[in-house]
Amino acid sequence: MYGENESTEQTSLAGFDPASSDDPRALFEELRKQPVLQIGPGFAALTRRHDIEAALRNPALFSSREEAVKLGNVRPLIPLQIDPPKHVKYRRILDPLFAPRQMAALEGEIVELVDDLMGKFVGRGECDFHEELAVPLPCTVFLRLMGLPLGDLELFLSLKEGIIRPPGATMEEQEPERKRTADAIYAYFGDLVDERRAKPGDDLLTRIMGSEVDGEQLTKEEVLDVCFLFLIAGLDTVTDSLDCFFAHLAQHPEHRRQIVEDPGVISSSVEELLRWESPVPGIARVALEDTEVGGCPVHAGDNVFLLLGSANTDYEAMPGADVVDLRRNPNPHLAFGGGVHRCLGSHLARVELRVVLREFHKRIPEYSLAPGTVLEYTPGLRSVSRLPLVFSPVAEFVG
Amino acid sequence: MRVILDPERCQGHGRCYTLTPELFEPDDLGHCVVLPLAKDVPPELREAALSGVANCPEQALSVEE
Image (spheres, rainbow over the protein chains, first blue to last red):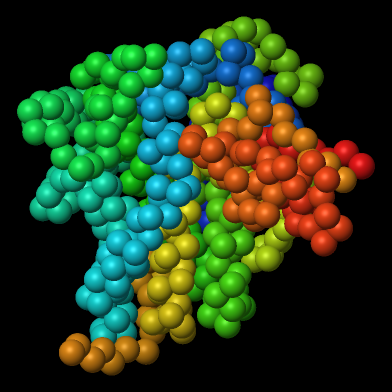
């Protein structure tokens, strides 16, 4: 159906974007009829689990280098846009800082942040979950980790949006805003690196600057390229996940009740909702050589989008993947990607997602979408622009 | 039953040691370390071992009887 010769299909796919679909699962199911979807000239997407896994594990063929995705940066983002063997050097520095144990130690602090944010709306009986929790939480966590003033929250949010969702309908129209934002990001972190060099702190940035591999520290430019990536990859994706999770739970009371009645199901619920919603629906690669996927040609230089959301719901490869089961086991999903570029922040994301599921349902076990709400999922990364929830106001006794 | 790790495939997703800490633990990078007990899995941990293995998105773990 999505073959190369069917021009009407091609046209309708010009605006191809599973992220903004109300039901990406149905779209993915349709797309999987072909292993390779031709989105446009030099732009293809892989649709099936096995092919996507193979591509993730073959960075020499499907490279994550700069050409794969344009984000306003002037040098490759580290470590995303660096392939092996150099990639290993950066992950050796960064992985220990984001390892599960380090992230687990942040849990108490994250609980407090969630409590504070919820405190602003529990008594009101309604909230915009996106605006009041999903957006500020990951950004605040990041500011704390980096030892930055909480007053920089709005600035950070605008920098992130300027790269991910600049105004304009096409990449060309968006280019000037992306460029301006990128300059601002380099300048902000440039000053910050100088500041920390003069006066080291007890924060993530200081630790990154002080880390050594083979007796060498990162250069200032390398540190900036790490910070740039943190800002655009680390904040929005947790917002997207929270939006997707709570949009699902608000519309599926049977799943919400399961979490309320048995908090023991929260860990597996995080994995299952990540799989089902795939808040990052796809990731970008560039083919370095001519090759074939499922018998379809992919050409050197083609931009190849790996549809993680489709891999995660490919029931041919993963039996039962077409339903939500909060206790699913096994659940070897690819929501954080796979291969050498597996999401660096995945363990931090998991802590944030678990804490919100637990704390929110403790205080607000019953909620639903505000009547008349039509959910709008954003293109690219799957956030929900407005997520108004209604619930019984909770009386709070402040001692 | 014995659990085998392909360290080249492990990317530190951390599903194994989160689900089955009796048999796996993270190293400093968050990659999998197979504990000695996993060389000869006691019967009461068989199911937990299989769960840890089957949840790896990289198929870095396998079992041998």
